[in-house]
Length: 437
Image 1 (cartoon, helix red, strand yellow):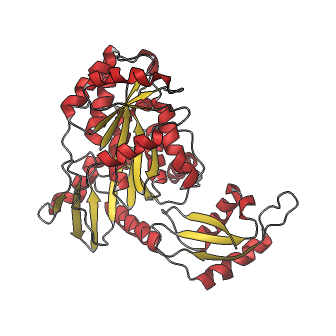
Image 2 (image 1 turned 120 degrees about the horizontal axis):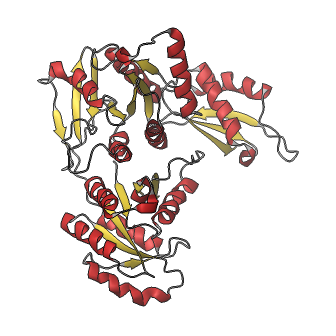
Image 3 (image 1 turned 30 degrees about the vertical axis):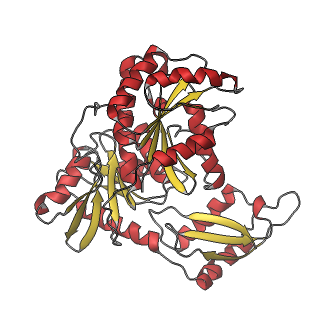
């Protein structure tokens, strides 16, 4: 499951350039969702069959002008705590600076698998300067050029080698896993507690890795699922919890370990950029989604207009993915808590839903006939047949066309929307592939 690689280092050593290089290679090969500009800090990639998440800690600093030691300390400590492997970037042209020494001493004490990567070796001449970085005491330094990409293959081989064997006692049964995510103080702990309180005795805690990613089993009132522990239950630690941008890193693991994410939004504060960041991680991982507007008991204006307005705002901010349940609830008063569970269960079922090929063609082909893909360069594009792929994590549909390369995202979205109109896939992403017939 979730394997996390973090890139740390002082400002301007090329962390973001390396991050872009690592994550785009995957974007190009594996995933054809159109990228968003807002998620510069988190991406997915694959190397030698191992899937990993990559985090650029530098992307999180609020104002990078005046980065002082304290900010970098926080980043490094957080990376140590959450990541499986750390890439520590230094600049081969500048040699070892005081700040590098400082970061290295924190990393040495942590004993986390770390790779020292000297960047900006753009012409292979600086290879002699590499020796200086042995002084950091973190093993053999590697040199790369994040801009040209030279050396990044060797670096990834090394990352795969250092990746700890997973010792997750992960539940293997087919029971859905729900994660409750959201920014700090949105009410995650209250929700977990109001679900779990009256049945602490029934809960079986599977403590997985040393990182205590706990699955709590909830089996009651006809529901049976695992709740993937988010930061709510884990003990507060050295990293200051009040720093909002770190809560994103916190959520990554829970999201990756789950099937359906329940995203809490604080009704008293409305939707904020932090919520959108967490949503974009859920979307990148193609997980099911339910939006829970929490603390609804504290809102004064509960009119139908207010509800409609709030719903519209949320869907607008999360577009183009807009087909998901939104529930107005209160974790404290337990109002509509079970509605949340029912919806989560439904979204999970939508992820498993299968549409028979004959039925799919019978509904979709007439629609495609009426609204064919726009012709491109005078060529007419024909779609003759479609089917749902078997055994995929999320519903995936293939449309066979004579010129697949000319069918662009807007038309794929049109197909997706038509499928959603005919069948209920609320809360789950859908993949649309166009293939040569």
